[in-house]
Image (cartoon, rainbow, N blue to C red; front, side):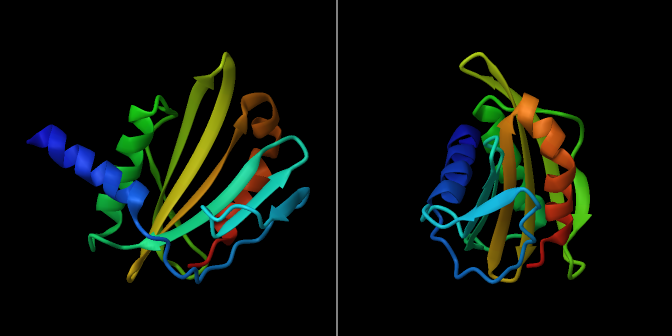
Length: 153
């Protein structure tokens, strides 16, 4: 039963319909906004392939930040991401609390970094994510962190 419940929760997040996006994020210097991916409400990349993205999904089942943070973290860990320390609290530009996770993984022999922040505001869950090869992500990390702090749900 416990395994089934986890499967349902993780699948639920992946299958949730996108919500009407109502947010703002500052595109970092050196990044260009992309508009060709219907899976995201916002997406930008730098010339080295570091990607910053935002998804707004319906808060269904209706739950709070702790629930959605756990869903995201467990899903990523099952996909092979390894946490780089404990999660952190980050407030968006409106003061809404969120949870930030930092991960690393190896894909096709290459080291990757991945940062994800989760915010819940009313009937929406916002997932802000950034990732790329470690060698190009690490120099871009300060710009990514500024973008995370600029997010407003």
